[in-house]
Length: 276
Image 1 (cartoon, rainbow, N blue to C red):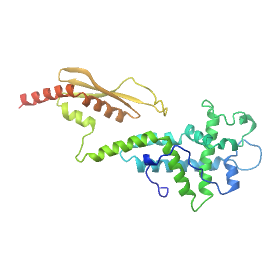
Image 2: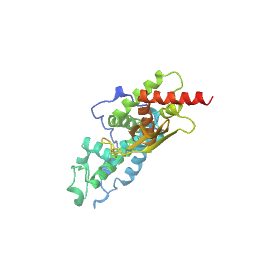
Image 3: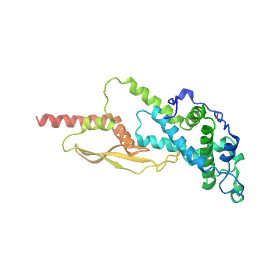
Image 4: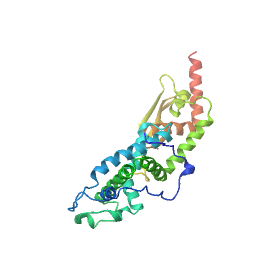
């Protein structure tokens, strides 16, 4: 694990870009920006990019692991993808003005600096160079490079998923206020109105296909009741980045309809009395 990885805190997130860590080896810095298609002699960024990719995944994973304690691994992977996907890394690259240093062959030179969203090749090049920069910053400073680069990425990444960090802190605070064991929404719904012969079904429903901010796929799930005089009764639905979370949101929505849930609970109590 990277040294001194501290969890994100919403209060520490800044609006401004954190200063770039310096690459202390001039030749290594040149390599970061040298495209493999150049005819001029010298190594390209490819090997550094390979190493930087591994560093970025490790650092992002460690930060997410330390911060999002109750988040399922699938959702953690989605958060990590938000941070280290080519689109995001290429955005960082341009925000720091590093695209002005890129040494590109003539056939791609005409796209230099534009960073157009539909130009996947240029986005990939900028992302690769950013990964190479990360590796070079760490390698060129054996004593402090890993520490300073991790601290820089913690601040940089925090700006990107600020909304998720703030939401996680709110949820953690709410959990901390609850001193007794609390059932999940699905388990609570089952405990309230479930019984032998009563079925609660969680099924896919039409809904938005992608998150408008991250572009990641979304899932919409509805919870349906068969029983207590109902057939295919939709109790609630939820949309999230994962099916399990969407199902929990659907159950939560159902529980919020207190009048309807009270009716089914009364029917459950009557059935239990009738059965002795």
